[in-house]
Image (cartoon, rainbow, N blue to C red; front, side, top):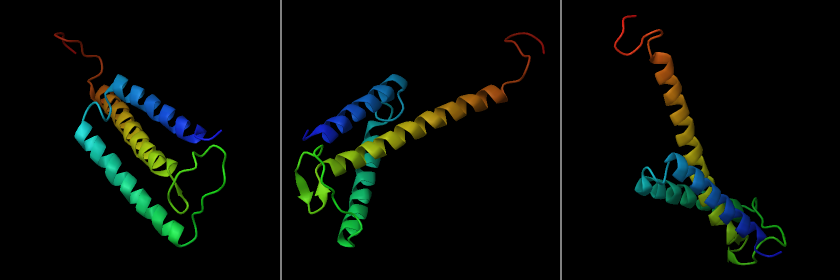
Length: 120
C-alpha cells in the first residue's frame, strides 16, 4: 500500500507530540530550541545520507509501502521525515531521562527523617 510508511511516521510523530505535550518535555517547553535542534539534526543526517548515497553505500530498496516520490536518487520523500522524527524522539527521550534523573537526585538529596517544621 503506497504511503503506508509515511502514514506510520506521521502517526508516530503525533504520538511523541502527545507525550511531549503531556509532560512538557521539548516542543512545549522550548519550541524555538526544539525546532532548531530538529532542523539542524535533520540537515546533518541528510548530508550524511548524501555522502552515503554518493559512495554507493545507501540505496533505496523497492517497497510497496513507500509513496514513490524521490527527492533525489535513492532519497525517498519519507527519509527527511524519518530523520526529523528520529531527532524529535531523541529530544523527548533525553528530556524525559533528565527529568527522571533530576527527580531521583532531589529525592536522594532530601534529608532522611525530616519533616517540615519539626526537629530531626
